[in-house]
Image (cartoon, rainbow, N blue to C red; front, top):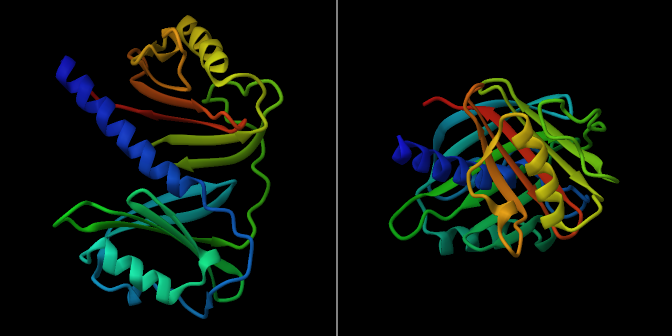
Length: 236
């Protein structure tokens, strides 16, 4: 049973890390490359869609697709630099994000994650309106917002009964905010898996389990006032 829990933590942590990159829907500032249609099919080595997932972002129904790209990351990077203007690209360790205008009033966003030597690149793609509506009320399924925080984005995944929310302008030290939310969650039946809030230096994020409702919750607080939370059911 302990091994199952450990594997679950590793899987959820990786899934949240990757998906949160797509969740951010890299803010579109306009300008740069534009196209009448999607440029996804021009990516060297791109394969068919392996997975699709419905999502609702600030109340707008969208679809996330996942594919494999059988091209090494260096070659893929060279293609991106030839195809897009610098303002359309954002590089990170082993990953790159792209956002460009499609068809005049849509924005297509890509996240490409390097799988390592001999492994394909994972390709996430989502197309959304150029402007999204305001996020609305903070979801009741998630821990309450810190003082001063403003809702930035709310994403629901109906297929997995999952909810993600991000916020900005939260006051306070991340470690102090984590201790506060951890104390509140434990009073209502949640168990922190990493016990980050109890460390001397304090942590900024934690994964919680609630066994009676079979749910898993991830919370994170950034040093610049931003934060996020994600909740979904789990199975033993």
